[in-house]
Length: 370
Image (tube, rainbow, N blue to C red; front, top):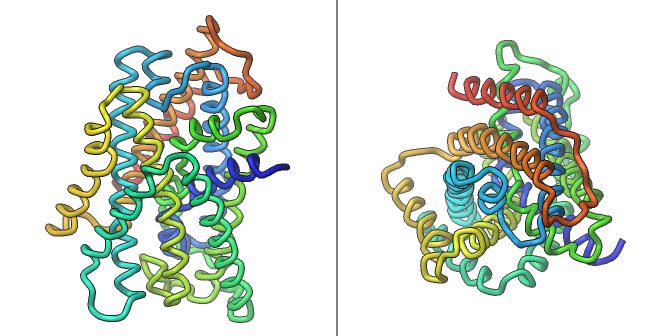
């Protein structure tokens, strides 16, 4: 495997690993570690299937698009509108969660009583400047960011291995079987990165499927190690935001995880505005960078939503609607075929599969609000 393959792989891993990892230990402790692992495996398989489905669409389509553009081509105006609103909701929710998390993380890490809102703004400013550098900057941020995440999580696990209590990992509390679903879905969300991966791996499309598989497997393995460390050591005492449990080293980890995801999501949203909606650069800046900042300031100022609330709601709603639309897009792309290239990835999709997954996502959304 060469540098291009691993850059593509790490781009997906970096897009997937974000604020969600910081909420996993809490929901795993509430439901039981083994229950959490069960849902992590099941939902990972579902997400892998949808990622492959979207990858096939990107490989079939000769022109460059993001999710909204593919919906317009293969579903028509109604699909374009629903996809745009869903993507905006999902991306904005994630970006706001990252800004909140980064502001709080830097506030705890740095000396002095610095306002988290101000530090979140500084983080936004740095990310906005990096966004101007384009794909080259994306590769650097993802590769080094993911390597740092892997190193920190493995180091944390090794350091605390002797303190892990096996009983904490085998206890299953009652009545919380579905509790982790929303946060896990958010933690596995990375749809918007797939079109970017298609560009990164150009010329090596035969390795695209493997890059997606490894790119999603890395977060799943890291999530398992990460949650085993927290739940194994702290049991039910795990805090809602993991950075508050172990101190500075986890704060640094949180900074890296949210940094990489923030960049990829902003990059993908920018491309959607430019290539799918034909926005001007000024309008693209407003939608990609300025709007998330404004919403972040409003939510923080008026204390409208908390960190974990945003993760859970965004996880089930955005993943559910976007996932179903992607399956419909794939079905439409298979039926179209005119003017397409032969894809290196082919996924079997039919109406019963789409109906089954749609019902599963609807149930997930209902459970999140119960």
